[in-house]
Picture 1 (cartoon, rainbow, N blue to C red):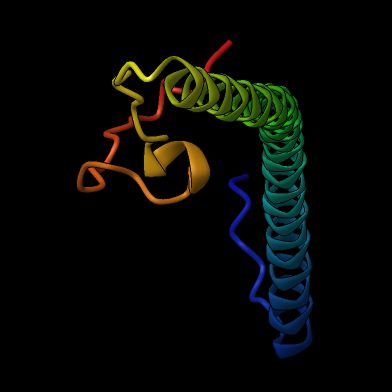
Picture 2 (cartoon, helix red, strand yellow):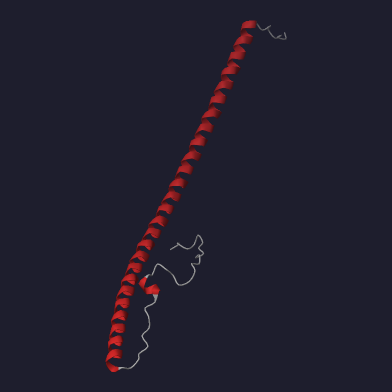
Length: 138
């Protein structure tokens, strides 16, 4: 005897829909958790990249700061040397002036250049110094 399908009752249709809906909701929740985990992984990777970049920038800033300190120190030494040499030149010019007056001979006594007296005033127009991103690489 062949079995024929039993007629489905309205209640069993409802149970079947509930079961399918639960299954669909579970699958949707699983996909949502996967997307959330993937997004979290991407954010962690981005955080690592930004920390590495931050560390690199800090090292560049530290290097640039050290270069600045070195240049400022060297500049102070050079300014002190200019002041000392200017004083020596004045002394030598005084000696030449006295020798000229005593001997009666005319010595050519050069003037002290203004750039030595006022080093912040350059004798030539200020030229821009071209630089690129590799200038401070070390």
